[in-house]
Length: 396
Ligand SMILES: *Cc1c(COP(=O)(O)O)cnc(C)c1O
Image 1 (cartoon, protein in one colour):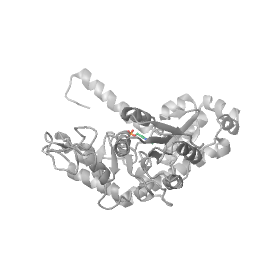
Image 2: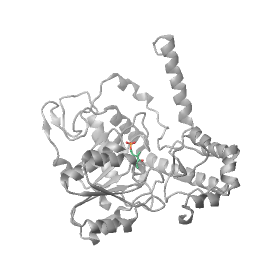
Image 3: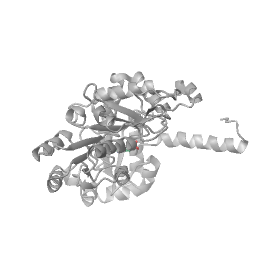
Image 4: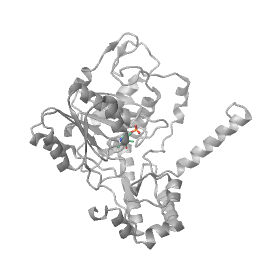
């Protein structure tokens, strides 16, 4: 490859390119899709696109993709069954920013609220709570990663006098467990807690939960006040991005008009990536509702295949209902490194993103079988014994 640089620098970039290429193929442990092709959009890299400020308000800075951003927001507002004419949102730098935005709105509405989230929540959320200075309580999770509703009920009971912010997971990072928003609403109703706000962290599963039957309880019609998703996970994008959808009436309470940008300052950052709305828009147009649903179904089928294959080896693999994440006792370090598998408390997972196919699963399984370290680990000791050591076997 030629990058118009000195021989040495050219070599460095070529090597980097090759590394990225090979590492991308062996990638099963993190939830990012790789089956995108944005090369037709290369001409857009020539412009300093910036969606400064609010996507729904005109701005003085006109080298932007706000128009497409609004389409992307509208698409997801409708998919997430937001109330007609009461939705607003923007394309963020990722799921974390969207989650932070949801919490920020919640705090502006209920400055004295207590935040509840399960201890399977993404690591970025605690930092956001710290930055926002919001008091919070971690709720136990069940063995599958879903919030323990009894613990939630008891904790709410003790702080009944405070407004409530629930941070619900629609697909936890490790096991892709979904907290049941309808059930949470029921608990709040039982306790007669009127002042509440529910944010849904749909970074991974939010993008495709609407295509699943029976439809999980996770969206506006089920009672949430905001939803954040990641754009680079299920949809796929060369740079991290995401989306947050909130109720417009809530957003209106924090909008401030800024002369310098000729817009309102409703987003967290000033300058905003203008290329990612373009990429997301392109993906939505290319795939349409049908293509998106097919991707979700493909992922679910591959996950079912991976679970079966692992189980047939005697490895105690499992997954949550309608999850594309398959959880199993962590394989050897070598296998984890080769396939970039994250591990936590002795468990690993593979995430069957839309680009994953049976061949990759088979190749991983070959590695697991043929690795001498691995044989020591799972087969001499016996998988059920190992699973017992990890104390999750009796739940599944
Ligand atoms: C990935 C993820 C996040 C963070 O999203 P980013 O797009 O990486 O900022 C938050 N929550 C969950 C459950 C995630 O899987």
